Structures are given as structure tokens and as C-alpha cells.
Length: 162
Image 1 (cartoon, rainbow, N blue to C red):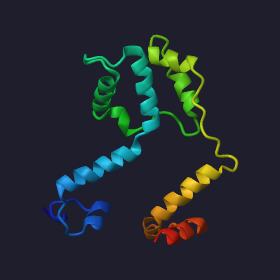
Image 2: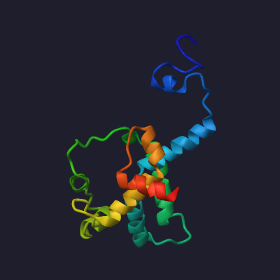
Image 3: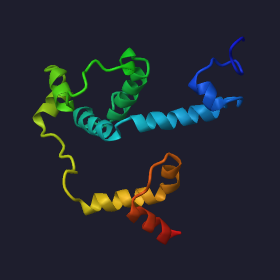
Image 4: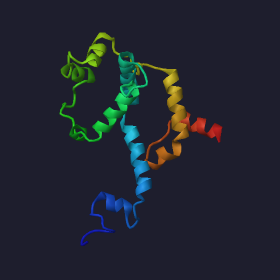
């Protein structure tokens, strides 16, 4: 193939890979981890809990877990995964209000329930600060590779563990 390296087209991926062959098995595992990072598991868990309260968790194929599994498989083939038609600046609450469907029991349950209280990160929170400091200390080397510096407290914590 003319203009390609190892049968791949030019561009950023070719520049990153160079002359290395792609191990499809390893790439599949790596893509899987990136997809995991892209999913809001808290929201997915909350949805599964609402489903569980509607259908229970019996032996048939309509259990909450199976409904979520089937929906995830459908999402993988849905064209809407490529882009959002909701403009930047629209909140999740506004988006949910606009997509509300009165015939959907999940929409009705969400509307009747107060929104999950989100932890307020506006002010000081020593618990969050401690967890973030510990996480940064554990990941200090990776953060440095990307030009990100661990906070001073994280460097001290990492030094005390080593």
C-alpha cells in the first residue's frame, strides 16, 4: 500500500505506533479500559436500582441486571453514541426535563425522587482533600509523565510510604 506504514494510513496513530505492529488482543483490553473510564457508573448503578424496584431480580430475562446488559449492547450499535445534539451549557437537569416521557416509569420515578445530593465541593472538605492527596501520591509518577505535578502534601505522603 502506498503512503502507509505496515498497512496503516498516516496520521497521529501511525506517528504514535511507528513501525510497531498492533497486538489486537492487547489493544482490545486497552480499549475496554478506556470505555470503562467513559461510563458514569454511579448513574448506571442508580438506574439499575430503579429498575430493580420495578422488576425485581427474579430468574427471568427481565431482571434489572439483564435489562442494563441488553441496553449497553444496544448502545454500542446506536448512532447517537457519536455525538450529542444538546448544546454546551445545558445542565443534566435541563436535558432530563427536555427528554421526560410521562409513559416511562423510570422518568416518573426520577421526577418524584429528589435528586441525589452531590457532595458539595465548593467549600473545604478534609475527607475529599485526604482522598485526593492519597490518590495523587499513588499516581505521582504517571502524573509527572504528563507534566502534571502532585501537590506538596501528596509528595510528602508518597515519600512516607516508600
